[in-house]
Length: 367
Image 1 (cartoon, rainbow, N blue to C red):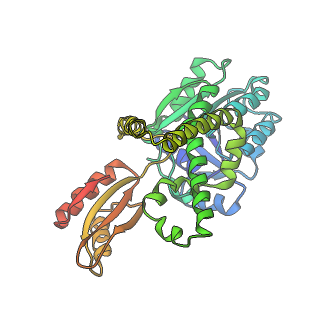
Image 2 (cartoon, helix red, strand yellow; image 1 turned 90 degrees about the vertical axis):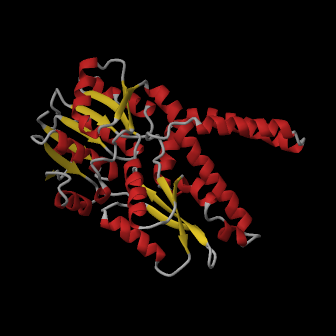
Image 3 (cartoon, helix red, strand yellow; image 1 turned 30 degrees about the vertical axis):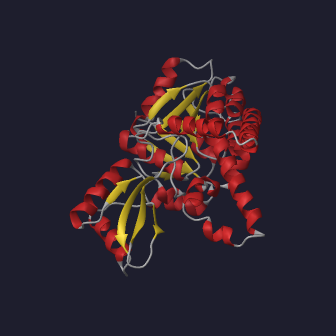
């Protein structure tokens, strides 16, 4: 593909898409716009984009591909703005938002003018944010959902797929309504549950100060996603409110069921409940990315002596292996503790395990 690509919003996703397109289509020119001038300058300095667009209007009017990489509420406003401009008739417009029905309905203003809009949602992310965290491998093996309106022709969808080929993502084409149900169940609801667990622990901590100290480890891990952007999740939940109302009512019924089992001490049914959950959870795919960005953990048995952490990280640094998180799960004097190291990809975790084995006798296990 050879053309002018305009990316609106240069965060982690927008920046990473720019890098993927530059790699796969080096003859194309990438223009970028962001509300932060400093972010724009940084994107240009890092080579994420080729040129800075002073306004959305300036970047959009001659673009062959426009990618809207902004919060979902802003996406609606940008679609309205684009519908008022004299765009190239062949231009392709897509977005990367986590909800699709509202945005697809909004895109009617473009479709009515003969401008193609195809909703998109790359299910990938990172613990880091901003254009400086952009990576060309961010979407590799991740699911990338496309939700074209029924009026969109197949050949146009294929054209967008060619533009996005450098992501090396797994593309699925579904309806906007199906997308919002799936995303609600496996992404939006878990974020609500994680936030509610944190709130519950916070309320208890008002009476029991130990809660905060004991909330490290497993509790911190299962509520990790509660650290996501509050403004982003506010908008996502409002956009997907109809689906989430249904899911939350189902969730309340599920909790009532568990509550009844506990109240009546139905031991066998409680066992079956957790046994079924374990079977389903253990059967989930382990070698592919899902809706919630995963970390790949490696556990290292290490002795308790000064400098052991820098020793391990030194080995990894020698092999240029990046880590996303590191923590000690347990350590007592004169016995081995567990050093938990998180990586962004399975390949990095495998390399790290081989690296540590080559430099030391420490036992490692994959979590």
